[in-house]
Image (cartoon, rainbow, N blue to C red; front, side, top):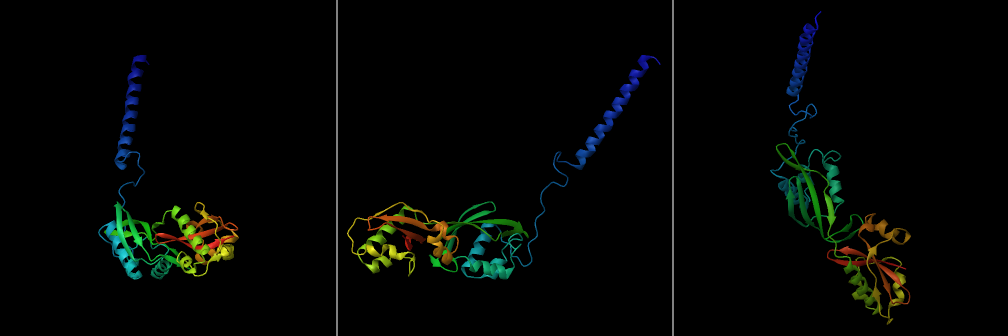
Length: 274
């Protein structure tokens, strides 16, 4: 066969092959308009609300409603504001039990709202409780809301950031307590204490009464884990070591340390370590 008749036939075959490939690409693109996106990709359908839920109009509104219900100790109402994710491991009775394990709310305000994230400043009656542990006077709670059921519901567990007094104030409080003990002023010393009976080794400061040496306080340090603070942890829970601060007192007959708790806007003594 002449060479010039082969070349057109090969060219026609190449053109046909290119046309098939092009058609396949068009069909593929038509089936997947997003190109490289995975099959089925696209806007997520609105999630349904869990049974009995009462969605609110915005993330801020649902957090406002939940905190108001909790301030009134109305756990049934606050449970109806939880998202399906928030209810995953909690029924209504479990939610009520969970809320009795955290400090009761005495007041709150919404501080910021950014999309589904809402930050609230929440207030409590400050103190120490063997059931709840430390009750900070104020904390920031960051809640996550979700669009469900045509409105907004909220997850069950906020991120909590306690608002403690500055650590340098712990040294001042420890020194004020030690000077009251040195002056044998039991009433004034008790005003600097958070508990009626100090933990640790209170006798370590017993010889301070009636002495005249100048007392000094070291910097506030995290409370050490171990036998010295074991009774504190047993009484107020493992979180104790996250909030307790220790201040060394020098100038006495023998040095000792004071352990303090942040009670509202001040630090108060809870233990003495030898």
